[in-house]
Length: 120
Image (cartoon, rainbow, N blue to C red; front, side):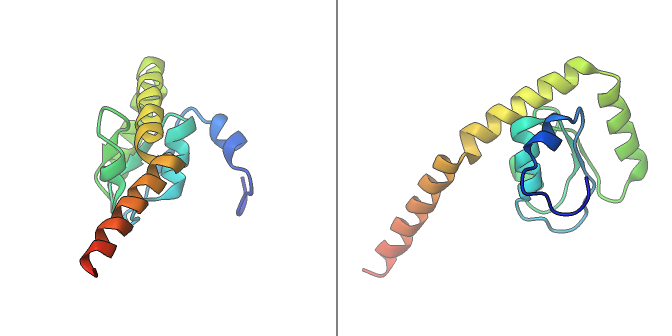
């Protein structure tokens, strides 16, 4: 894959493992949410990532800037189809329940209602 893609779904579905080796403050990275909805994954902890990915439940989290830990996690996933499937299914369920379009709109509406009450 090269450059920005309009439709990432086919690319993500083709993956067995998704790695996000980032050590920046990512906030809530959309790439991670998209991958969690369709693919098994492994990624670095940083920013808001630990808020959406739970170690050993929906992902394998490794320390930032630790290439040996990253390699070990990828090797572990590459050698364990059951773990990939389990993490992938849990990640998808977690994102559908907590980060779907409808769920995010509900959360935003709650925030706006709470904030608007402050000014009344």
